[in-house]
Image (cartoon, rainbow, N blue to C red):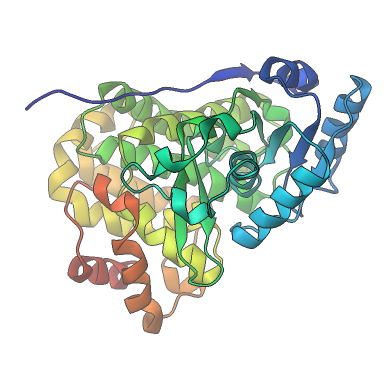
Length: 381
């Protein structure tokens, strides 16, 4: 085995309860004087958003607010965000929220200075080199959920509103200049969102740990990320005000996104088209797909999970881990099967077409094709 790889790890993170107060300093560190705060429609009227805007105004900054962001953001949202950015004369973006707000905010900062359409920067080969890197605006990221880890990611997932395909838009400068991880911002999440976002972080760690690519740093981060979710997601599910557990979950989210530089796999290849076609919650969809994918990948990942299970406090090696995952889903109110999310068997051929072209396929430990993906979708129904 030739051990050759290109590695890039995350950015400056201000971590801890109450650190949203440092948002003006984070903007100054990033060189932003006229920020546009990008978030989703649900978050825009909430107290945590009002507080962030008040903190900025109290420091003499006059932020703009853009909240026309769908749960699965698309190029229509993106065009509107870029228009708002230009109209307001902004010089940087505060990406604020869960995965949708973070992804769209980062993409607004990226696209505001580009002349080519966003699809020209899809994560294919070296397409990212088409971008004018000097025209990318600085980004401060503030996650309000503990799940996607988009705050430490170098890409955004944008849905094509015409084809319903989810596309990964990539550039190294998508990585925010500064991140504020304040677990107090996650306290108000509904229980179902706490579960779905937490299991998104878990899926990132599981898939990174399963990926065949060589990245021992990611492997270690993924393992500890799984442990943090296992130990702390039930705590925050039942006691939303548990700030210590919320902090551990916020760490696990960033760790999952850091770890999946090693690769993702069939869970995400399946959940991306499902989310695009049926508008399902991404993390919940990942959780629903996970048991079937673990069964599918079993022979390729058994040995590594046999070793990991003891560290995770699970008996029975891989088989014990697989049983644990289903029980974990059940305890957190996750539906059993894609059918419960509204997915129909008639849609499977189109979902397979979307999955087979998803970049996540390349990180699955078993090579994916249309035949075995079809079988996987039926198994996950």
